[in-house]
Image 1 (spheres, rainbow, N blue to C red):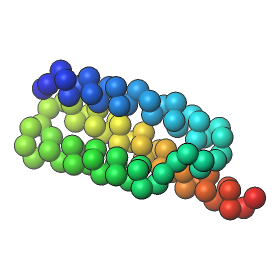
Image 2 (cartoon, one colour):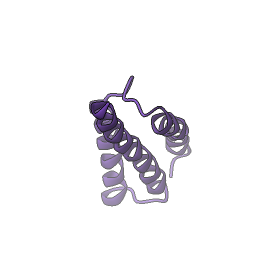
Image 3 (cartoon, rainbow, N blue to C red):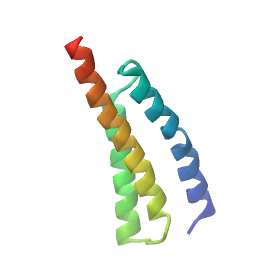
Image 4 (cartoon, one colour):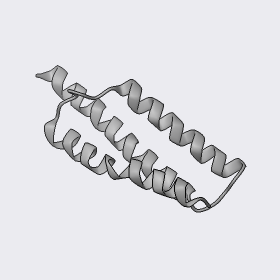
Length: 87
């Protein structure tokens, strides 16, 4: 288990609750890129796969937490896009 990997995941993960809150309350897709969110989710999936197949340790839970937050923001993007189309 690497302290630097843990710190990286904590730093990346720290921003997502704010992004999720903003997406939820603004009901807007302004400034959001679905491609960017999908690329990030792919990166976390590959990190989880690395932990499962090569270097399993408890850091996998940080990868899963970050992936779930990005997936939540992506879900909000889809919701907000539908809201925008209905207006």
